[in-house]
Length: 265
Ligand code: NAP
Image 1 (cartoon, rainbow, N blue to C red):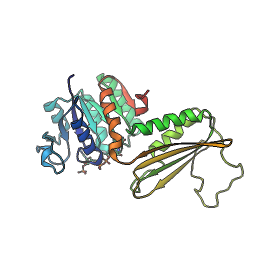
Image 2: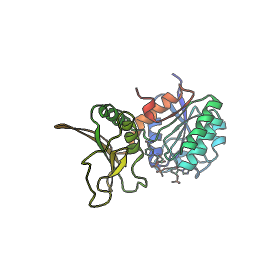
Image 3: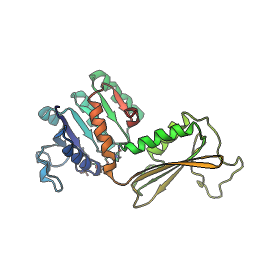
């Protein structure tokens, strides 16, 4: 089997360094270069914590031209990730993007580019397969339990609330559940926010504490019973099986896929 040639952008970061390990540990993947705004012209092995001898490029197009990769894994920042994804598509390199924060118009523009260039791209705001299954199982359960509350918990450096996964879960549930007002019709909040955010009648609660990484519980209630569906990411390695799946799948598609749930049966 021919190895999939990979470039990683953001390799020194928390997610990127895990992705370097993933590529190194996967027999049918090979790392050919990394893209970094620092250390141009050096080798990755010259950076503390890395042993792999691949070149570092600050110019992504030069990197593509000289190393001829199949896939770009981008784990950087929204602004840079968008530029990298466009350049990858324009240069015939398939992007697998974990970078979060792309707007709907960014996605529309990138979708247009995949069509123009006839190659696939996968953009996944959550690579944890367990989290994707939690969303899918919650959608299944919501057909039978229409009363549901979502409690998501993250580290205290997270800027957005609710989390993208919490919101996406509420969207997936509301696609199969008739909008309804939950709780007592006359309930009153003594303290504002006590009942959480309201997404089409579904209550969403965001917990932020040091020590947490990314966790979510979807709590369903019915007559005399409750059902809890919970997922916990304890470290960033939890996202890597999803990155692997995305790299393998992006080689087989010629369109933009947004969300790993669309490639997991
Ligand atoms: P991080 O630790 O800050 O890593 C980002 C890396 O990108 C840093 O090494 C940074 O270098 C580098 N970078 C910045 N500008 C660059 C450029 N122009 N070219 C190349 N590299 C550049 O962040 P992280 O926690 O790994 O997260 C990375 C992204 O993944 C974020 O968008 C985050 O929200 C997302 N994320 C996604 C998932 C998922 O499942 N999809 C899970 C967790 C996180 P400097 O430090 O020198 O600036």
